[in-house]
Length: 202
Image (cartoon, rainbow, N blue to C red):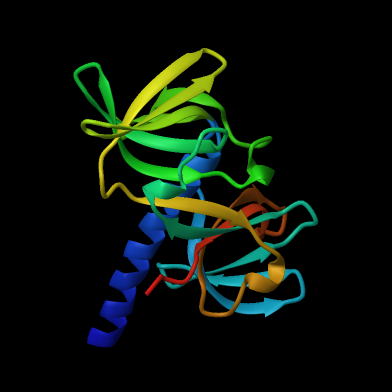
């Protein structure tokens, strides 16, 4: 019983991380929430996901399914010209980054662009970085989107991840993934995107 409880706790933590990444990358006003689970079987383009409640979900890979590996990097990997999703808390009039995802080039045409308030009270900015510099309080990102410009302070230690497009062969049984897509008539999920955490760096 203790072993299963430990696995469940680890799954919940991993699923929460993946959910945050997916929300940052693909947030849309009316998009359904992602489905998080562990791959229990792969048969061609069909994945079987074991969900946290003990049920199973069939996921169909399509030719346009975007599969993303989420790799931990550092602030040194941030640079002008990149497209990023930055979650930030507001401190007075200032925005302080709490989580950063560097988008894969293949994502930029499909992500929601701009700046908006998330349900947790933080501000999300999906935009191109026009300038990145070190400042007295850490680092500063200047991001340009259609409606304006955002200046965001990046303290040391903020989680930074790079989302890399990979091939379906990167998916494996036992992997914890987050899937966004649409329901098919048979109850399966047609995957628009799949994301998973890459191997931890030693």
